[in-house]
Length: 109
Image 1 (cartoon, rainbow, N blue to C red):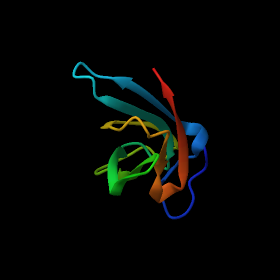
Image 2 (cartoon, rainbow, N blue to C red):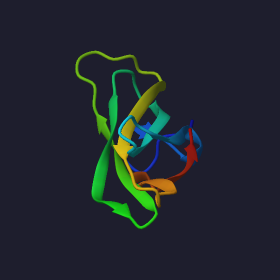
Image 3 (cartoon, one colour):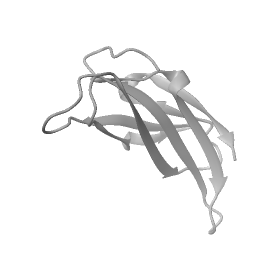
């Protein structure tokens, strides 16, 4: 896992994410993006959400969103998982986590 930078409380880099495509039961192509970030404390909640525009010719664009913890937390770097599943077209080859400038190549599952 990478060290926190750029004003974010949770660090992430290209090496911290995977993207796996598959066909669902209705023959739609979907991609599941998974990652683990190094957050400054325990208690952070992370999610991936579509960026605007969400799909640019061969890329799916998402943002990594942090929700700060409430209450008392452990002051130690904490690995925190994030996962999101998105519908994509056959032409999509990679995921761009736009607000972190992270590119993840899509592998077929």
